[in-house]
Image (tube, rainbow, N blue to C red; front, side, top):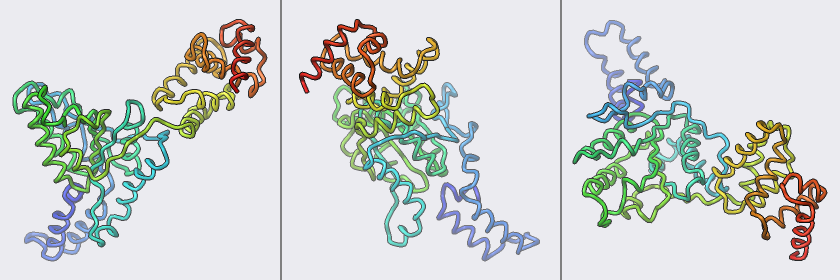
Length: 356
């Protein structure tokens, strides 16, 4: 009962109620039996990971390769998104806390979520955050394994993973969703993928609220229109604005002693159009260099910003002017860190000030 209630709650609970009302023949201690049934139902929510063990993960028939990966302790710490997007993710979590209240109002929970946005904006991290906030395992579909060269096998592979995810509370994450849910009028596609779309359409309609299906795509325009309409929520993740970039970078800087917060703010200002994952890579690159060169992270950030703004141009002029006015660095100090001559720095600062 404890295991079954996680995946098929209403039916199993109904059966449990019947068993408590009418104890099966052969049970010696009826009161102990009823107590055990009650405790099993009360324990639902504890030990969810028992259902999602390596031994139960579906595999490719001809290779025994696992079709999905299970993360029992997903970590979404550090997720920084636009406030409106975070509000939507938090609503999905809150719905589970107020499940009974919503059901009494004849309102269904969000069962399926489509995340779209450019690469690196945080779609995978958002799925991890949802799983962590819900206290559920994260089951990720391995698209390279699920699409088989054998006719008819791909649809069965996807169905096997979907059935596995429906067997208990979890977040099923389908990354690069457009790879398996393309428009059925795409003449370049093979018939097998068109059949996969039909499988997905059926499953999206039937998805239970005991789990959460999260799909991510960089190219929502490639999705079959019928698939896109079937998601309960469609959330677009945008490139981080300056506020989000500041939050992300200052979060990365926690515990780092050799960093000037003013430089962190400057990096946030000068990296417009940069994704969260690219900012993280920039930070980690500079931290590695600081350790290898026995230098400060502050200097490595300035050096890398100077390199990325090029040999000349408004971007580099703005950087040098900001280092001069906001960090009170001399032209020689800026030149030493940026790897240029101090007259070059002086000229760049003059140009920046002339532009206002």
